[in-house]
Length: 280
Length: 283
Image (cartoon, rainbow over all chains, first blue to last red; front, side, top):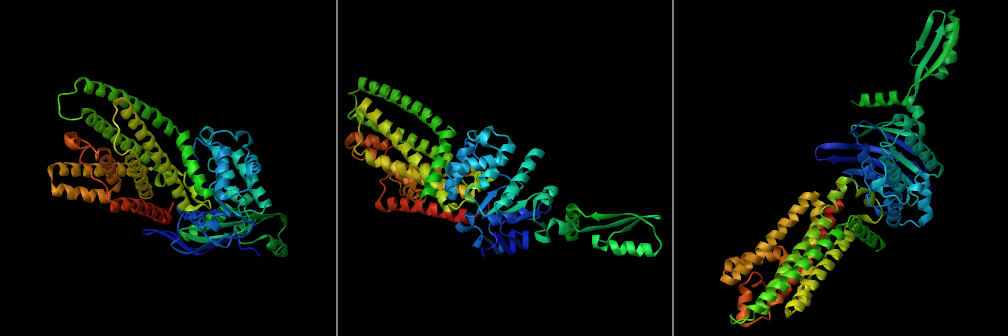
């Protein structure tokens, strides 16, 4: 059995007196798509940077595909798109991907470059210098660059921040494609809707700690049950779908007439705000 | 090895595409053109006024002009070294250019080594070409050929290679602007130390000699430059030799074996320190 794409144990990071991470345990399984949520300054980017080997952990451990984060073996298995990145303006898309192929030791050659450019919708821009590309095009090129060398784990730090709605949809499709190819993804994003739509699991970080974790459905949870009766709408805020037969039976037994039942679902946004507020 | 060459090639392409080398080549051609013109004019005047002094004016003029050309060659080589390396780590990290490269398996040590290889290669090739052209212009126009031709060339090349190593160490610690300023300050300090040594030699001052000695050990690129100047004028004797020694490029110190060895170790230590600092940096 191959090791998980990413495992962190009691991971901490201090910048002087500032504690960016305070003991984070996180696991990203093989081919799993995990969303990383949290307010600004929560430690999300620090976690991603430690995984990428850009930042050194103060204590604890992080392993990428079984190798210590930052080691050559770990770097060989991951792709990374930074939140604030730039590519040299003089470089064309094809040249940039070729450079990263060489640095990653990829044997994909021209076929891989063509495949990646097609995947991100930049086939027509292969010979275009980066300085002539829009921010959205550069962002998509950044994603293609992160996928060079068929990584097992892809770290995407705010990959849709510069994209318009159509671009965001394209990235969602791209993430689905990565799932199909069995690539694990750790997606750091502020866009809850995006995370809810594509991620298998969500980890919420606040104050350097992992404060909630689970599938979007688990985290969203039940939002209560509303039952229309002759007396008006009766609200049962703690009830879930499974409680409906018992609630209806109880009301009927009390002589109520039932006109309708509505199971209210919570949203990931509610769960996120609850988790972050609870931490404060 | 392929990672090293890839990074070096990337750095070279960057210099070419950003037109750094084009600008350098055009302006250097202008400098060499002016040098040739000036050399021709000076030697014409010397020939016209020859005969009044008991010295070889052709040698005095040639040694002085070539010494000037070597100073400019070193200065331009240092400028090139600084601008090719000043933002290679901190500067590129601040702009987000470095991170996509650092996460690749080649690693930080190879990244630095590749940058050094490219920058040192360009700068040493540059000073060798400029020195050789100035040497040929001086020799063909004025008929002056120094006693030693190869030693000054190698010393100048070694001096700029040390500056490249220092600038790479600086870029792991300082922002691009601060690093550029720091390296030029060190270059200035080295030149001042060398000049103090030359003045000390003329005045027979032990204090100035000691100060200069300390500076040459602390900044051995200056020791190499002094060695280059010394090799240029060492075999000029008699009244002409005295006149050359009293001139702006006379009195330079001959680099001893230990300081030459130290120059090599110094560059290695600067490189090792750069690798160590870079390896520990959070980006």
